[in-house]
Image 1 (cartoon, helix red, strand yellow):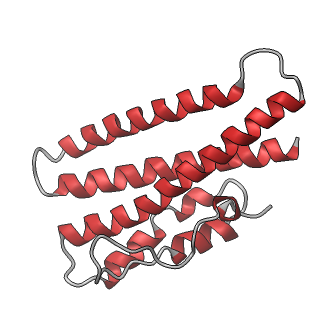
Image 2 (image 1 turned 90 degrees about the vertical axis):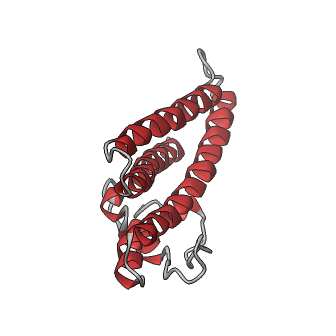
Length: 165
């Protein structure tokens, strides 16, 4: 199976952005992920953000943050969708196979909660590296985007592997 965007079941057309005149469209990222060979989806992270920033007027810190946040929102929705699907399929697989040991679905929820806490703390530290400067917002937005996207790709790969069992 090529790419993981098919698993995400998220709209390919552009998201409504925080800034209505922002030239944001998720298509560059979604199409790249969908076409990527297994394990290569991470090369696509930030594609839509880059296109948005190149097309945006004016090109400033606020625009950079808004472009990155728009893509992050798409990945966050993918995180919620993919995590829910994997949780459901793990629970069904555990029942079907009469899995002996810990139920995996609740453990995945613990993992997801820990990921969110770790992501937030990590990105707060990244933002603090700017020492209160305006670059902090850009750094944090990109951190949230990249960490969330990487985790979604990991969850998607696990979902694919579970389906192949």
